[in-house]
Amino acid sequence: MKHYVILSLAVSGLILSSCTAVGVGVGVGVGTAIVQEGGISRAASDLRIQTEINDLWFRHDISMFRKLDLTINQGRVLITGVVQDPNHRIDAVRMAWQPRGVVHVINEIKVAESAGIIGYAKDAWISTRLRSALIMASEVESINYSIDTVQGSVYLMGFAQNQAELNQVIETARTIENVKQVVSYVKLVGTPELAPVSNGQMNAQQQATPAPATGEPIQWNQESVY
Image (tube, rainbow, N blue to C red; front, side):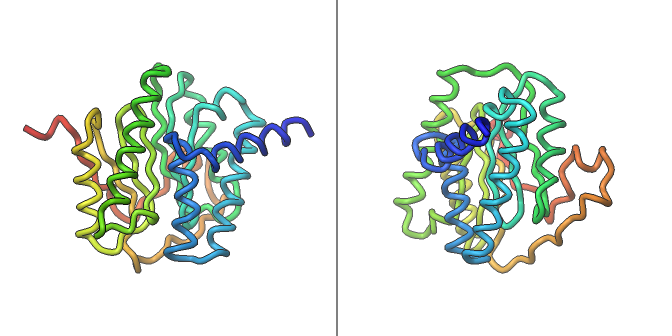
């Protein structure tokens, strides 16, 4: 029972913390589902998926659990973070497929050395700066976007009212200091949802890799700008 109490506190901390990259991603992700598409029932399902995945990770390896972040939107699971053990990357994705209702697992876990407190502070600053900029932008429904930053890479998830709004969000993100890359998994309002996947029909290799996306993520990389 002890680990369930710890998990409850950990999950609560993730949801309530709005000043870190983790809190921004998880907290706004839940709000997006309520405000935009799917309603309260979809938001409740996403929260259940989040809780179940966190519980699986926690019981499997506490160190892995602490290094990974989750953003969930309409059954789409985005995993970010930095791990040192390549097996953690495989295990995390495999377990993310297990909860009922998961339709897509997006694996953005990096296998590298941690950037430490300074790197984490820079990432949190980027997420906070972008969130503030989106709130101030009258043309953007900022609550519909979740933001997660890992080692200078900004990951966006949620819903855009139209392509022009999404382009503005990406442009805003890429102009922030210390941003190396912007990756968007944002859906346009009205696009169809993915069909649920049956875990019983998936082999180990399929469980360890992301399902096919409905479209390629929009990416901006600093190295391509002159």
